[in-house]
Structures are given as C-alpha cells and as structure tokens.
Image (tube, rainbow, N blue to C red; front, side, top):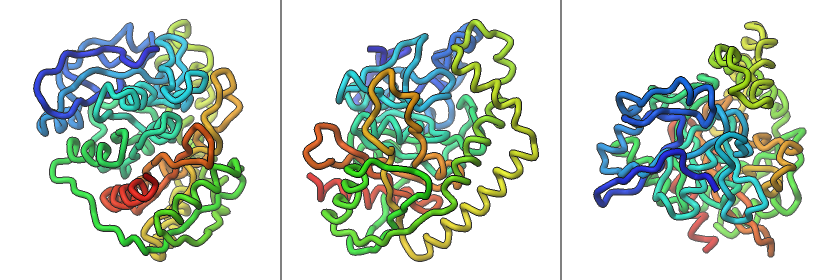
Length: 371
C-alpha cells in the first residue's frame, strides 16, 4: 500500500493535513508520482498559497500523498509509485487522481487532505473510498504552486471523512469561510444525463437518500450532457498537451498509457478548443437557468460501484463529474447507502458558482438524516 510519497513529522495540535503531491510544500519536491518529473524536481522554495493559508490557520502538514501519474487518470492506478489500497475493498480501485489523499483520510491518517480536480479527481476517489470530497468553484482557490493539467478546468479542494471535515478543510484554505443556511424543504433538481447509463441500484440510492433527508426533487433531463463530456475531454487533451508536451522528450520515464494520452492532445487544434469553450458557454447558460429554479442539483458521482483492479479501463469514471469542471460550478461527493450492498454509493450535489457554503449545509443535512 502506497499512500504517502513523503511523510513528515508535524508538531502541534492543529488539524492533520495531507497534501497531494501535485501541490508545492516548502522543502519538498513536487513529483506528480511520475519519474520524469521526479528526476527534474528540486525542493520547493515556498508553499503554494493554498498550503500557506492552511498553515496560517494552524494545519499540521503530515505528508505528501500518492496520485495517478501526472494527474492523468481517474482510477488511482500508478505503475511507478504503487496504487493506494482502497480501505473498503482491497480488490477495487481507490479512484484518482487524488488517490493517496482519499485513502489517507479514509484510513484516519489525516483529518483533511488536499486534492486537485480536473475531471473528477477529488470526487471520484471520495466516491470509491466512501468519504466526502469537494470540487471548489473554478478560480476560487489559487492554483499558484499547483502543477497544471488543463488550467481552464483545474481546481484544488478538500477531502474528509465527513462533511464537517470538508468544511474544516475549506476554513483552512480560505480564512473566514462559513457554511450557509439550507432550507430542508427546498425542491432540488435531480439531473438525468442523456447518453450515460447509471447502475439501477445507485440511481435508486440517490433518490432514496434525498427522500430520507426530506428533500423534494424534480427530474431534469440533460440533453447537452454528451456534448459537455466531449468538450471536457477536448480541453483536457488540448490544454494538457500544451502543458505537458515537453515531457515527451523522456519517453522511457513516462508510462505508456500516460504518454499516449499526452500524444493524443497534439491532434486538438485551436479551433477544437474554441468549439469546446462555446459548449462551455452553452452548458453554463443551461445550468444557470436550472439554478434560477433550484438551489441545488443532484445526481450520482460515479455510474457504478468502484471497478475491480484490472477492470478499471472498461469504465468511464468521470462520466458524471467532468461536465461540472467544464461549467466551473462547485460539486460535493457524499457517501450514501445502497440497499443491502456492502459498499456505499455516492451522491453528487452541485451548486451555483461560489456557493460551497450552501453545498456543505445541504450535505450535512443529508448526512445527518442517513445516520
């Protein structure tokens, strides 16, 4: 089991904070769990602002966590640094790319962890490991000192064992952060994305969790979903190629699957990026209209239980998360029961931009109702 890429001795009595090794921590190299980056890395001369903010609030940095190589896969599998063991089922993937951060929290080795999310890299491992993860609004949290993948999608956010821990994480990285009030009787929009098949028990579990919490919901079909997914994948490939193409000069220090992903981005012309940005505008317009009617939207986080190791490439793990990176809206992944199944499911709540406080208030309400 490889959770930590570097573990620190942290003194004091503040919250224990784990940091994904895509984020600079002073005195430690940022390696992205990738040999070509590790070969060239030197210790960071200062904390990324998000880490500095957490230290200023009393956080104790307990280590830098493992991840999928270059943040470029949502399964958490890494042939170089190892794959963190899913604490719920060792035969299943932990999810990624913030795999080590999720596992460190789930195992109680950190109170809060920081991850990054470009297509689902906080929410997917949270779903796989049965914890809570928050994708913040794009642009709300500084990306200075954070290794880029697709800058128009990248965000930093916290993971915790429960909603209170994620709220603590937000207060560490944003001084003065508070949750908002949320009306328990509010009607929310239950998204039904076109072209994406969700396992029946998981879909039913989301509806059951909302009903148990006293929330009223109305179904909302999303015909734009396939186009939003295409736009998100185009942005990751195109922007990612522009950020990472220099690494192709070291082909033997990148795994074959990650090298292929970088190379595929060469085919993404500027016009294709422009089309993706146009789809983003249409998606934002669609979601803004929904948010005029509903304070929150809900859907599952992943389409099925976490795949078994070896079968992860047969599943699109970001099929329900990536569109909210495209829109930039904040989204919360929250564990929920799935009938008599041993593994929990995950409910994804989405709010308008900069309404993380509303998300966490609603998440706390649902969490309390399901206990």
